Amino acid sequence: VKENGKGAVLSFSTAMHEEASRKIQLENALHEALRNKEFVLHYQPQICFKTGQLVGVEALIRWMHEGELIYPDNFIAAAEESGLIVPIGEWACSEAARQIDFWRKKYGWSPSISVNVTANGFTGRLVSHLKAVLEDYRLPENSLALELTESMLATDFDGTLSCMHALQAMGVSISLDDFGTGYSAMAQLRRYPLSALKIDKSFIGNLSDRRDAAIAETVLMIAKSLNMKTVAEGVETREQYEWLKEKGCDVWQGYLASAPKPPDQVVWMYPNEFNL
Ligand code: C2E
Ligand code: CA
Ligand code: CA
Ligand code: CA
Image (cartoon, rainbow, N blue to C red):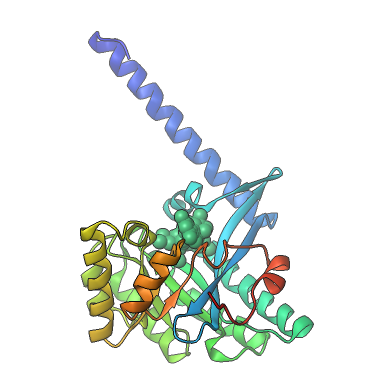
């Protein structure tokens, strides 16, 4: 950037223009991706501390684009801004249900799947979509669960809330993802019908820090006093596992058990019991 006034303004607006056109390109590419079925779900086990049993798997989206696997941090924000997050969320729910049906028929294995949905994805459309999908495959109510990711505040708080009540009535449980990292976590906690809190991996990865350990412990206490389950994500080491187990956390997931895997590897990789 040049020092003289005019030059600086010029290159600033050029940069803004480039940024804007990159965004439009990405949004167009995401539209195409949805149409061409370029999204895939990978699955990571969620394990009960007490029993070592698999309680379900979390579905994490990836974009197979021109032979390259693209991770969600590179496109979820753009999908949210463009509103594409709504059809993507619906796709993820259908795909997860189809996957359970496939595993069930082929292996007699039907784990419950947790799907990530951003606040703005909790719409009446999602509710009717989920209902239809569960009916189509004749899946039991608790086959699908949702994780509310906090990347953006709900623009329609009341709409989100009534959608959640409808889901709860359908037997679809909702957990609050990344608890403690996003917007007004406490406000969400007060208003939404949530059955679990997920402790973000940024705290778990740093338990040797007194502050992060205190935050993780506080999340466990809050959940307990509100009768909610706790799920720790990003568990990578035996020490983290032991710490969380001792503090009474209910469920864990992380590389210590397995990274998220494509569906064809999941059934072989994930035993029903994880004995560490
Ligand atoms: P998240 O829901 O908090 O998911 C946890 C992230 O940590 C995932 O990254 C997962 O692959 C990664 N992870 C799992 N175990 C470990 C571990 O032991 N250590 C470390 N360092 N990382 C671990 P991923 O798959 O790249 O997803 C990033 C975020 O993108 C997710 O964070 C979620 O907020 C969002 N996301 C993923 N799939 C979807 C989706 O279908 N829809 C929406 N709306 N968001 C999604
Ligand atoms: Ca999640
Ligand atoms: Ca997240
Ligand atoms: Ca997280």
